[in-house]
Length: 137
Image 1: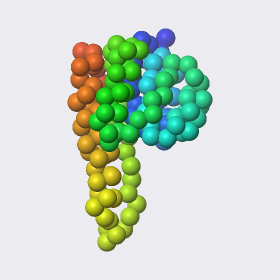
Image 2 (image 1 turned 60 degrees about the vertical axis):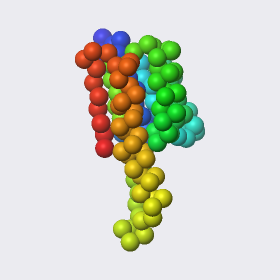
Image 3 (image 1 turned 30 degrees about the vertical axis):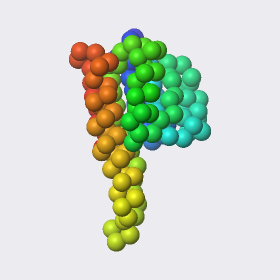
Image 4 (image 1 turned 90 degrees about the horizontal axis):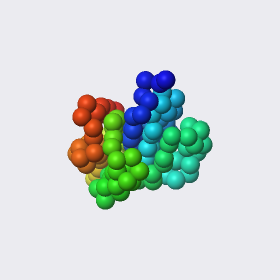
């Protein structure tokens, strides 16, 4: 028996990096995991790497509220609850300070701040008592 048997998790930004590694670990420990990401090809590769068992990939942009809503509609329909939320989706702006534009700023803050806040807020109705929220900023 795994430490996460019977648990349902959402990992935003789960198609690569820390999110993918966490998804692999959670599935290995018995959780059913939903992963999100903006790029379908990365999501498909992640599902293949995880093993296609106990994982659902949802293409979604964490900066768009209607897409966050879609993620929770799918989770609610398929599992009815959420035990673990790992808000991991983020983008890095590797631009020298003197070259940062308003668009760079907006893109980064829309995913890394707005996206995290509304990802957590919109999860509240389906989070079980005692659920875990992990913020990876």
